[in-house]
Structure formats: C-alpha cells, structure tokens
Length: 208
Ligand SMILES: Nc1nc2c(ncn2[C@@H]2O[C@H](COP(=O)(O)OP(=O)(O)OP(=O)(O)O)[C@@H](O)[C@H]2O)c(=O)[nH]1
Ligand SMILES: [Mg+2]
Image (cartoon, rainbow, N blue to C red):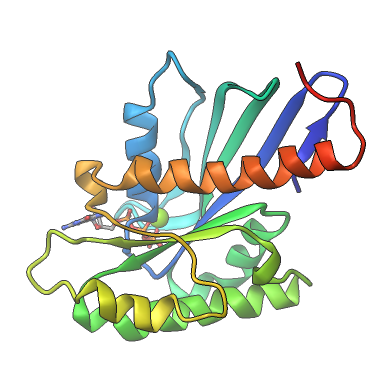
C-alpha cells in the first residue's frame, strides 16, 4: 500500500514486476540498479534470493529514492515475483499491497501460452487478495525483442493488452537495458499521477 505522509511530504510506493519464468523480471531490476542516475535517485542495495542457477526463489527487492516531485520526496520499492509456476504462494505474498505492476512478457513465439497463463495467474492472485486490476496502474513490457523468434508486437497486444482500457506497452531488450527505463518511467508516472493528485483532491494542503 502506498504510504503518503503529508507532514514529511513523503510518498512510498510498491511496484511489482510480474510475468512468466525467465521472461526477464530480475534482469530489469539488475539493469535499473546498474544504471539508475544517482543524481536523480539514490539506489539502495539489490537484494536477490535466487537459486544457484539464478532463478528467483523468493523475490528480488530494490529500493530507489527518487527526486522530489511536486514537493513530495518519492521512494519506489521494486519487487519481482518468482515466475516458475510452482511458486504461486510466494507470488501472492509479493503481490500483497502492490501499488503498481509491470508485466514482463517473453516475446518468443513459443512463450505466448506461458505469457497468457501468467497474466491470468496474476488476475487470479489479485482476486484472492481482493484487489482489482482495474484500480491498479500497470504497464506491459514485451521483452527479448532481440531474439529472432520474437512475435509481432500487434500479436502480443492482441493477447495481453485486450482489456477494456488499453495500457501503455513497451518493447524491451532488458539485458541491454533497452526499454527498461521507459517502462519504469511510465509506471512511476502513472503512480505519481494517481497518488499525488488523489492526496491533493482530498483537501490536503498543497505541496510547495
Ligand atoms: N536474449 C535476451 N535474453 C534476456 C533478455 N532479458 C533477459 N534475458 C535473459 O533471460 C534469462 C532469464 O532472465 P531473468 O531476469 O532471470 O528472468 P526472470 O523473469 O527473473 O525469471 P524467474 O526468476 O524464473 O521468474 C537470463 O539469462 C537473462 O540474461 C532479453 O531481452 N534478451
Ligand atoms: Mg527472477
């Protein structure tokens, strides 16, 4: 849950990277950690709990302290879920209290069933947590665009961006950092818009 402290003008939000196994969620966080501009954001330590073969076992966690926006000092907590199907209890735990979601899909043609299954699994887990995707800002990332068997973006949009309201989507090659910050910037923009406007429209004092 976002924490908005009007007294100290601090906003803290939780963003969860969700998607099928090996889609590139952890890679996104590694790239953010490696490249985030310290002039703009103080990065914390990237905590990863993974197996010896680098598969996420529990989650990855990266705190970023971003610049002051509209008078609010913003802190983003980035998490990844473990994509492997067997770790659903953990996925639900990580999803609890999320403010925004980045769904990282694998662009390889043969991964489409896994993408769709993972998206449905996310919807099921949100329902179990009494959360509704319609009320949670989210964006889609079509990762691994560098691979020769990448499906056309239009096809992925048809499969994954087909709800009542279409959301922003980005192509990415996460291990080369392409599309990583475009995706992160959009989800943070959506969240700041939601929470700062919300807090201002509830009669709270206007930040300087
Ligand atoms: N070719 C290519 N490989 C990528 C890309 N992004 C990530 N990878 C590779 O894909 C593999 C899996 O990436 P991870 O980031 O560990 O995937 P994950 O989604 O965290 O996987 P789980 O933790 O099992 O859910 C790694 O070997 C990455 O280097 C990409 O854009 N293109
Ligand atoms: Mg991972």
